[in-house]
Amino acid sequence: MKNLPKRICIGCNETKLKKELIRIVKNNEEKIFVDKTGKANGRGAYICNNIECLEKAIKTKKLERTFEKTIEPEIYENLRGEMLDKK
Image (cartoon, rainbow, N blue to C red; front, side, top):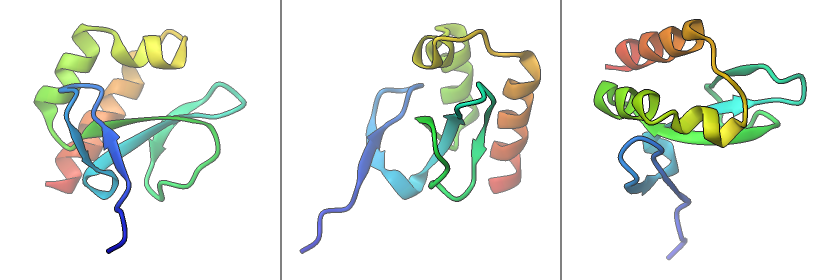
């Protein structure tokens, strides 16, 4: 049996299958975006498709610590939009 890749959600810290999570990437140009393919180059972080996990990550500044960069509010709005679109 093949091992399926697992990642940890930055909001709830639960280990889940990679395909169940949304990937957020910071590329070489310091641009942060949602990676729909899961294959974009750059530093990645994973989060559940769950508004509560996103709010927890925002409150604890988990994304900012992961990417070592201040995150603009519009990036968080894009993430909220992505999560609402997937439901």
